[in-house]
Image (cartoon, rainbow, N blue to C red; front, side):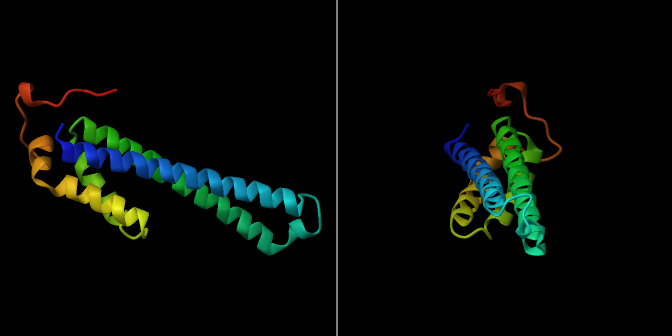
Length: 139
């Protein structure tokens, strides 16, 4: 595996770890807030408390889903799957909006997925690589 592809794969794994950490932090904040407000108190029935709690859970699920997606893309990149290149480009462009860490990781991913080594690693769509050039399977 070329170094630029390894770096791209690592950037997706790091992004996934950060997304899982963010999801865990949001869940912690939600449950800590719920414990401080109290489940059976009058304050727990306020609309703001319900909206903030629901938004925290929804955001945690979204971050966890993006983390799983990033791990799937990283696995596909390691195996040289063409779909992983396309999905990786889409996710990298989306992560460019997450300034500053997402911008850095997205830029690294785009450089690897659109670089010179990517065409050799992933091949071109519709063509089959000889068996000797198929990337090895990594666990």
